[in-house]
Length: 278
Image 1 (cartoon, rainbow, N blue to C red):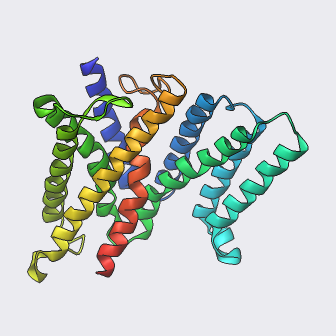
Image 2 (image 1 turned 120 degrees about the vertical axis):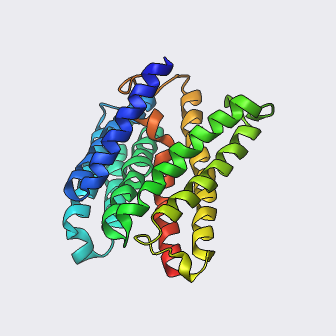
């Protein structure tokens, strides 16, 4: 199992390197594909994967990514994101009332939640990479903070862990592991910022302040990644399942591997904007 998990992890890193280096429409289509698979996995947990609300959710996700590519809604009608979400809610509620009582309100809420939770949040990988100055370097912070925190927390927990962080939700996670994960992320982000300080606009010639601020943001993003991981686990516990799927050998489904990335991506995006405005 460990070798299988390690091999899958290496393949994921290689694929991430390729798609993020490519950027542009390649990364956009990749984010959309990951989003649709993740939505299917989540909708399957909710038991609505082949229902009308689910297909409306899939359509809204595709429409959202098309707007990111063309800026059609944003150009003529303001925020394309807000428009898609409002339209999605209206259509879902229309199906709810006109097909009543075929669908329960939890099906409608689940379909809406899936669009906000997965495609909207994952899209910040593309937005950071292609719309922010220095984004081709900053975008890697998403994975350093999420996967890095997870790795350091696992190692620290195995070596030092005694006190349970969330004994009912995730018995294997410990407080010591969580602290180790955050310390590891702080050092990892600090090292990354030092290595790529010039393209990221963090030159030490102007003082270490912005570099340390970046590392502090890394800690915040590490906390958020833990929340994302535990939240995805909580959903699985609610529905009494082990994994969201079996697409990735040794890891489970897309949602099992990207649960922390999903939450971390928008936080890193706005942290970078704050850093550049500081």
